[in-house]
Image 1 (cartoon, rainbow, N blue to C red):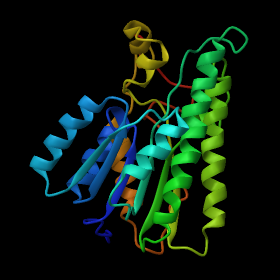
Image 2: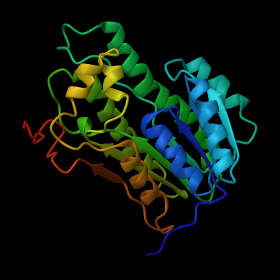
Image 3: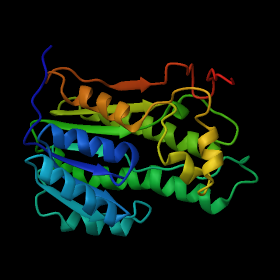
Image 4: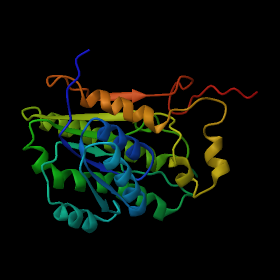
Length: 258
């Protein structure tokens, strides 16, 4: 099978300190891709940087960054010395709470919009001039099966992920005459820290999300990101939905209750 060599390219990964972002960083480093890793938890990024630089012959720059703060994103991009970015993995995002919309915290709702929507468009806009200069430009947006299926308790989260999907689809159209691909990755049930964050550290609630079936893991999503990045230059994977074997949709999962 033909596989594009992506070694030597430079990728920016947002939300790289854990979960899918961390797994994507590991996958990219294993392919010889140099990295700019950004997240709030700088100590985790430092540990990841040290590990990957020892294991692979790559250069890694890390940035402490809160994607809910536009001014911080602007400063972070300004601080990057090598802006010859080929790949952007827009992974930073979160869900907060799963209560009914009229009961949910307004601040939580606004924080989801700030990170999942505002952070996405600000970072992409600031990096776009550099990606456009690349012969191998590729933007990968992490959406969700929640983008396609509304569910109770997900009014804001589902809306933000629909935003991610339409944003990606629209800029793909705008870039049809440029050497830049745009891919929306839509994971289903992935067992990461995502649910723990959603339920404000309540591990029991988070664990219950994945009970009774084998969920996806961050490495599964990174594996599919690797696939879309390594297709032939004329092949663009516009969208990829990835679900667990026993998952039929965002909310329909067969669980073994034995």
